[in-house]
Structures are given as structure tokens and as C-alpha cells.
Image (cartoon, rainbow, N blue to C red; front, side, top):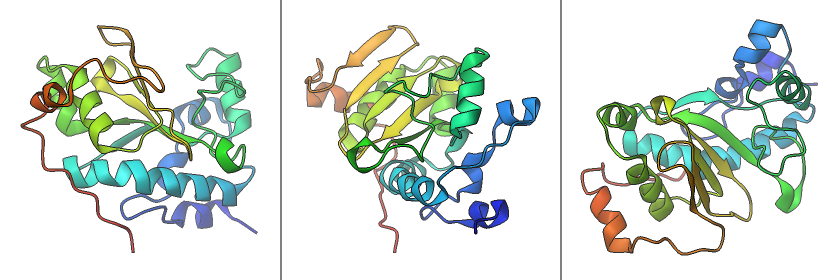
Length: 204
């Protein structure tokens, strides 16, 4: 029998625990619980997400701030019905419900901010510098960028789609699934020559 305290203590990866992803501003303000229907599946999928994508970001750039992590189906539905920036539960791009689906249909994602890059973005740096860095270094599925703090949704799937979109100018789709980047690898690399050296340490 899971307790919320026990669930929060579960270590998903070298740097992340489940508790960091359970906080919800929507849930707190509207007094709605944010507890997985299937904790084991949420942990399994969340662990793959953190080990594959979030740990390398934290090890390369330092602190990664989670803005919005896991959402239960009931909380996400409430957010969608009340126009609180939550996609429909059945939207194929909805990435916050970690305990829905199985096999290749699993998905996990979070809205995050990298403070190291947010500071540079605030002084005019192009969001595409970070987008292309992630494309060249991470096995992501989807990335969606947002104007505030250059936050972005980062998504893991067993079979990645490799898609990048943005609400920051130039708005729209930067890279579609199966497509090759319009910029050459050397042009992409020139964007992030001052980035820290890539690090990805396997969790024991």
C-alpha cells in the first residue's frame, strides 16, 4: 500500500525524487489532489524521463527547476476544463500524465527552466541555441518552448518523435518528426560553443 509520503521519497534518478514532480499550483489553489492512480507506472515512466533527459541537463548546466511535473488524470482534466493551460487527457501531446498507457504508449514530461540559460535569454539570447544543443545531445521526444523564462516542456517516450516547437519568435515548428534540421551540424554547434561541456553520468 502506497502512502503519499512513501511515494515522495522514491528516488527516480541521481538528482530527482518523485516529490519534486507532485507539487501543483492548480491542485493547491483549487484544493485538488495530485496522486497517481498507478504509482508503479508513474515511477517507471518518470524514472526513464529523469535518467534520460533531466539528469544530463542538471549535470551539464547545474540546477534544473521543475515548473510543472506529474499530473493525475483527474487534476489534468480539471485544468483543461477550467482553461488552466492543461491539454485534454486524450491529447497525444499531453505529457504530464505519467501513469497512463503502457509499452510504447508510455509518456512522461515536465515543464522546466534551466536558470543558467534563462539568465542569458533575459539578455536577448536566442532560444534556438538551447533547442539545437538539446537536439544534438539528448534523446528527447518533444520540446515546446514558452516565452516566460524560456521555460520548455521536455518529453520522453520509448520511441522518440524528435519534434521541436516554440511560442517564442520565430513561433511555430522548428523541427518536425522525421525531418532533418535546416541548419547544418556545424552551424548548430556554432550557436553553443560557450555552453558547458556535456556531462551524463549513469545512475548506479
